[in-house]
Length: 247
Ligand SMILES: Cc1cc2nc3c(=O)[nH]c(=O)nc-3n(C[C@H](O)[C@H](O)[C@H](O)COP(=O)(O)O)c2cc1C
Image 1 (tube, rainbow, N blue to C red):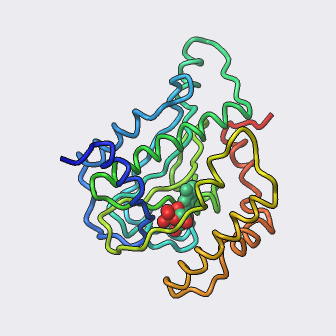
Image 2: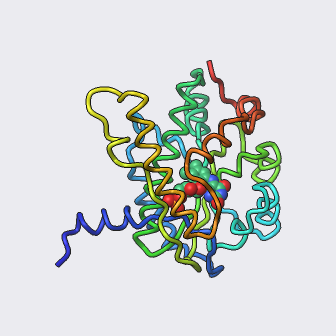
């Protein structure tokens, strides 16, 4: 009999984002089972500052395809969720008791961390059930327009979307940095030694890109491009408008 811990590790190691799905809807009971597992993720002081909004209506999904930069998978998957930081419940509890509810950077971070831990547990649960998933950070391209679709009250902050469904592709896993570049002893290594790990990773990623038929020189080239310009610069203002604060 396989060691159950190996089964979990094998499932985690087999992760790869899925970008083409069968469109058969994810049955409610499967989604609920996975969400129950997701909810058991650790949560800062048990505040449970997250929610997942399932969008089913085709017109709304099509609008979200546009808003995520044309990502068809948002409408063409078995279930699409918007994962949100949720401070609404805390506001309701405080308001009912006539007590202030104060939001600052720490409160924002708690909600984003909680939502991410929940989502990742949910993803692992779904993958263990044979589903594929893809996070959709493109949801943050235009948060005011996403808000028009969701119409959520103050204190709800969309963090990312999540496509779920039966995989209609079987992509090769994307390699990661050498574990010695991630699991460190006592402090941080010298820049030279970290750059050596990155050089080695660039070679493996370049080979991976070649196998996908893409001409990309490696990880560094992608990272250089990614952080050359700031992205989604209006989002701090939008999250503030929805009740967040970054003080
Ligand atoms: C928060 C977050 C947002 C992401 N947003 C998108 C997205 O908008 N579209 C997409 O195709 N993939 C998206 N991804 C998937 C990443 O590109 C992917 O996880 C990464 O390249 C590693 O590949 P792997 O998941 O196949 O191992 C996102 C992942 C995360 C964690």
